[in-house]
Image (cartoon, rainbow, N blue to C red; front, side, top):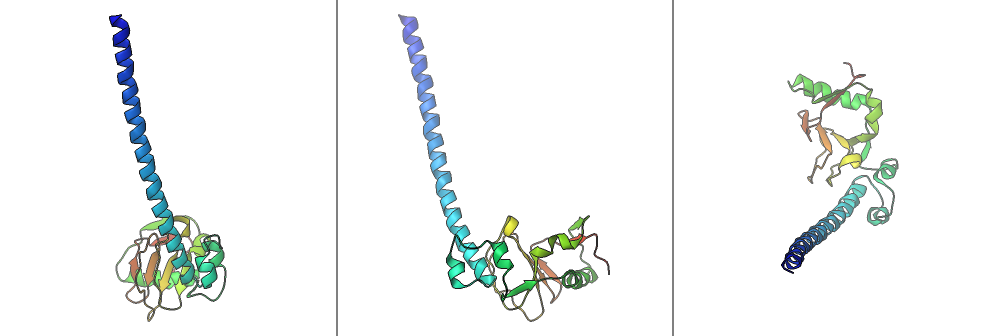
Length: 176
């Protein structure tokens, strides 16, 4: 009988440990869900700001089921235009002449990533774009970056050949 009692007590202890673990996991899951909901709300807000930056109509800017950033990039009439390799080369030449060094060297042509590069046409603010939604903006003299979080976006200022965002690539087809 003593043996049965101790096995029963041992099982109770194990069950108690399992219940404690399960309760902690449910709490972690609930906290993760709350963080995810907050992240999704922030992402929608940032996507709306990005859509406005890229010139989408107010209707599209607020429509969370609306076009993707890529679809908006492909429309016309924005505060940004697609950059050419020459646009980037002009900035890179000034950057190198000022004694700074690139951060990356890629063994493929710039053409492969040109869809990520833009030239600002007007003063602008940023929403933090990350990952596949990140863009790189060459900022001509006289155009102002009005603020906002960079996220993974890179800014290349023609005035002073400064870089914000930390990414300065060189491609195998860039020559001066």
